[in-house]
Image (cartoon, rainbow, N blue to C red; front, side, top):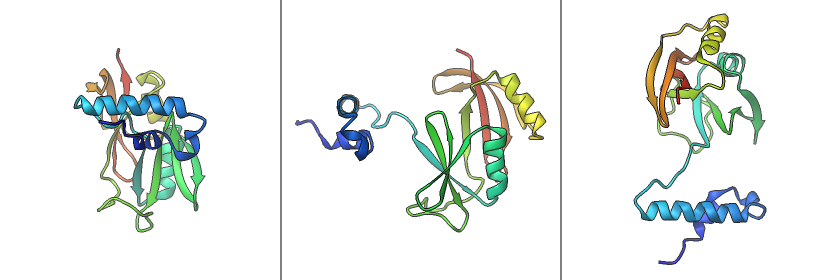
Length: 166
C-alpha cells in the first residue's frame, strides 16, 4: 500500500509544512505505522472548547486562579493558553461554527497536570476562595499515578488538578 501523503499535511498546519517538512514526514510515517498496527491515529490534545455562561468569572478563574494566559484570535475569539495546549472559549448562545451538537456550560470533567507541588496548588486555591471538593486523593492518570484535588469552575465544570507521582 502506498504511503498516504495526505497525512503529512494533517500533521502540522499548512503554513508550517515547508519549514517543518522533515518533522511532519517523520510524524506522519509514525502515525501511519501506528494505525497499521492497530494503534491510535492521534497523539495528543491540541485544544478543547469550553462553553461558558459566565464569561468574566470564567476568565478570572482560568487566568487568575490557574494562571493561564488569555489570547484573542480570529474575529475576536478567546483562548486560554497553558503549556502547549489551549482552551477555546464559546459564550453560550454565541458559539462559533462548527460546534458540538449540544454545547452547554458545566458539562466538562477535565484533569490538568500541575507544574508546582499540589500543596502549592491547594494554597493558591484557598487564597482565591475556591473550595476544594475532594482531595488530595490518589488517582491514576494517562502516564501513571498522581495525587489530585477537585474543584469546580464558575460554570460547574469539574476541574481536577493533579501532581504526577512518578
